[in-house]
Amino acid sequence: MLPPDNRLRRREDFAIAVRRGRRAGRPNLVVHLRQQGTSKAGNPERAPETTQPSEPDTLRQSVAEDPHAGVEHAPPPRAGFVVSKAVGPAVVRNVVKRRLRHLVRDRLALLPAGSLVVVRALPPAAQADHDALARDLDAAFDRLLSRAGRSVAVRADGPAVKPGATA
Image (cartoon, rainbow, N blue to C red; front, side, top):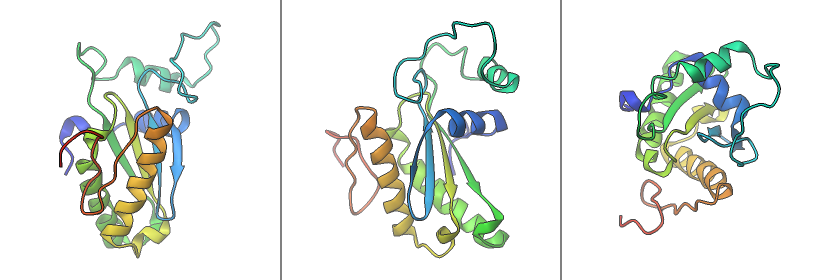
């Protein structure tokens, strides 16, 4: 289970990660990553120059109402999961969700502070074993984080680790 501070719960947070973040697709899942303070291209965000809102009001309000916004230190990375009925019946969807939660929990240290991650399971995830989901998740994180100038070392026997960290 993910610690409470690392969970995405609000619809607006999911929407921000999916709409404004970068995406990496794999055979069993799709990962959306939105890093705090960066635009979709990876450049620092600037305040909009016009007074006309470019996003729906709910998205702008969710950023203003972020429970981690008033904290002086960087907020922790937060993750959420989307497993639709296309994946299978409720029992199968819950198994897939538990596996993904466990895998993401082991990889939270890789994510930059304040980032939002949404992991969307695709229908083949229902037949995928734990190792296949881990490989797909590691490959997606590697792709998303290496574009941001961070490299990720993936261990064959366990969770990914930051370069220079001892296992």
